Each structure stands twice: as C-alpha cells, then as structure tokens.
Image 1 (tube, helix red, strand yellow):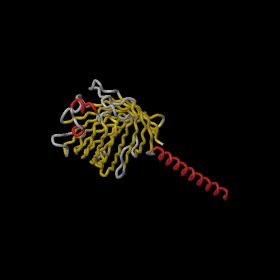
Image 2: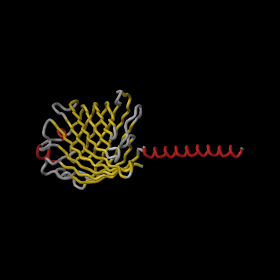
Image 3: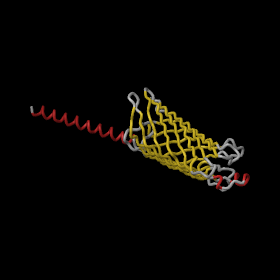
Length: 292
C-alpha cells in the first residue's frame, strides 16, 4: 500500500516537473521570438531619372534595430511600442553635381506608439498616440541633411481569415527641416543656400498596408506618406514631400531571419524650380535582417 502511494506521489511529481519544464521552454521560445534586437545588412541604388546627368548611386550599409512590434504582430491595448533604427550607408558613386559630397551617410528613425482606446463590435480598431522622428544625413544624394518630427494619432486594425491584412492610418502635426547641398543650382541658376533650404511646420499623413500569407509568412507592403508644410516658412515658401513605398518580407527558416525587398519613390515640391528637373528620387534595396 505504501509502495502504491509512493508511486502515485512520484507520478504526480514527474507530471508537475514536466509541465513546469515545458512551460519554461515555451516561455524561453516566446522570449526568443519576441526579442526586439536585430542587425541588418543592406544593398541598394538610387537615382533621379528626370535628370540626364544624375548619377546612379550604388552602395551598401549596416543597421541596428530595436523593434517591439516585430514583423507580423499586432498592437495591443495600453502597451508601449518603440521602433528604433539607426543605419550607416556607404556609396560607390556620389552626386555628379556636388564635387565635395561625402560618400558616407546615416539615417536615424524613431517611432513610438501606444494604443489607448479600442472600438468596434465585430472588428477591433485601435486608436494610438503616435510620435516619430526621422533624421537623414547625406542619405538622398541632393539632401545634405533632413529631419522630420511628427506627433499625432494612429488608427490600426487587422482583417483576418486565413491570411492577414493590416491597415494603419496616421494623422499628425509635423516639423520638417531640409538642407540641400548641390553645386549646380547655385552656379547655374544663382540660387543661394537661403533659397535651397527649408524649415517649417505642417501636416503629416500616412496610409500603411500589409498583407501576410499565413502559411508561408510572406508579407507584402504598400505605404504612402505625405508632409504638407505651409507654416513658419519664409514668405511665399512651402515644402511638400510624398513617399510611396512597396516592399516584400520573406522569412528565411524562421521569423528571426528575414529578407526585405523595397522600392521607394520620393517626390518633393517647392514654390519654385530649385534643380531644373523633377525632384523625384527612385530607390530600390535588398536587406537581410537577423533578430537575436
């Protein structure tokens, strides 16, 4: 009888131990999956095709990433999300019109989002506080320095059946500053730096879309953003920037190893022609991202 009780106790102990061990393994796996640290290597090219003498800039770089949301997750109510990315890039070809242009460049992107309200019976919509900062140093050929700061609200939702469709809308107030470093407008058109540069306030809007195939994990991305600046600019000046981005994310073996393909179109508009051609930049890039 004593042996029966002892065997029963040992069986219960083994069951509890196995359950605890399994739970710890699941927690460790979950922590690994949700680790926000990542690094990436990227290669790309960019050009102003509307300019006959524009160079085709080619280069490569490395980036360091902190991403609380990760690639295929959704926002949760009353949770803080930080998404930070710093990148260093080196170009093989610099802008032909700018003789003293450096070949190295840097980008810093910081996004903060906190969902504070939800609504919808059949479909959940999350309303979030949104803040972002983007700083670009020498990273877009004609742009010597550019920064954008945004504060506003974001609406997110996911339409899900077998596959997932994520929709995001952001609207906010923004401050933008742009400094051009290009010899040709000064030498040929007589424009000084006070005419080339821009700084002021305006509206910011972004529409983001992501469609994820659940079986393969492949994600297709389409995003459009617009900054419309009209406040605190010099008399008669304004500055508008449209960005259209298409991309694809392909998991390699697991979600900690991703391959990104990106195509981007950046169009700027001013009250006068600063360059003698359409200020539309075309960029394509491929990037490998590894989460630790």
